[in-house]
Image 1 (cartoon, rainbow, N blue to C red):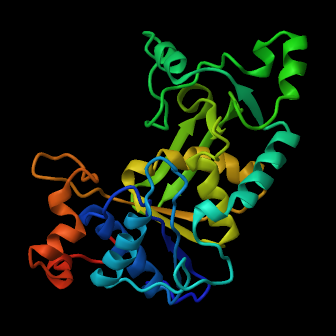
Image 2 (spheres, rainbow, N blue to C red; image 1 turned 45 degrees about the horizontal axis):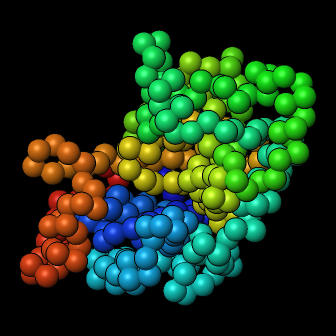
Length: 294
């Protein structure tokens, strides 16, 4: 077992788009245990960038449910800390600075393709989902080298808002990292990753950019999250490198599933922490058999 490290910094990063469920609690408890074993710090970050879905009642419920379950954090939106604000909705200046850095150094480009355009191109027989898994492989229609020189110059002067911006993924590179659970991982950028969104036309950062900027700014040393987000790590590693940030370690937990084998989601209301508490279940009962590292 590794010696305790007071420099360890982990985080809980829920999004208040619904009530937390048992799957969230299981992953978060692993993060809590790893920070505690290391003698480090646990940070709570409220990932409330989705203006359409994030609601203040869910924020209040999130804090209440986490406390009821037994979580204690040393920095967060309710108690502050040296890296405040801990609500993503208040961190736009950080994201804008990262966007301008990426734009200035030529890492990103504007894209007019709709989701339908990308989905239809990815539906061709030779295409398919990339290593990201959660979005189809971008066909590169708006890459600068695919445009006429005059159109390229015109787009270079476009304002930030009103158009999507994509990260230009290198074609001839393989990315590697070692996950704390799944072991060695690799992805070929040119064939499996694809250019990904970093800024949306509604003038908000993508998930990929926001978490990289925040984890770097908050000095997170290990990201503990669900296995469904493991493929996103490759995109984030490219952003860490482009922004000249040191990446953290990654630890992707197995997902909690329901009786049919489907991973838990916020639609599983009967397994929300609220519903379980109302049914008389206790945190100790729900945590029975859990360990901090599996």
